[in-house]
Image (cartoon, rainbow, N blue to C red; front, side):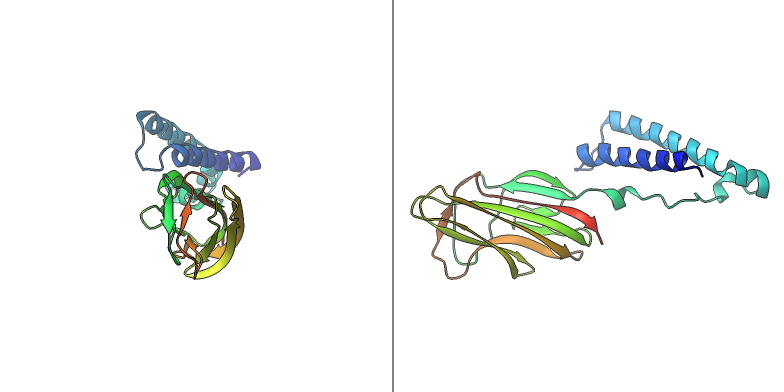
Length: 207
């Protein structure tokens, strides 16, 4: 197979992933997307036939018996994973209480669960996480980000009021590992300002 054909196959798959990953995270495809998918299948089939024609002529094999000469990544292998969530209203949190960010702006891959505030890794890989905290006047707040219950990042918003802090971390996760943000231990209940408290993360690379 020529490099041009290899690149064509890979780019077609990337384009397919963009269309369906970006606009069909809920698994519902529009008529336009289905029409696009049908045309894409025809294009890939044409490229496959072009690639395998020399083997068919020299070996007498049927085209369907000749495998593609390259490993083409599946859609699941290149599907992005990312989320971004905020608070819809003031939330007063107690000792070690998990923050349940209930306004989900992005959730590609469905790793974030707003009911419990947890992100669960759909695949093993290297992940990026960040969370932002804003305090009310006279109410400093200390937050933690934890992986499977173990703290691996901290953030503090000062007592002066409407102060903010951000913590950014990178960590290796196995499939099923969980990450969330919580109030620090031995802290009195503190209010979190809505909208300016957010939690986000995305997959950097599969491992």
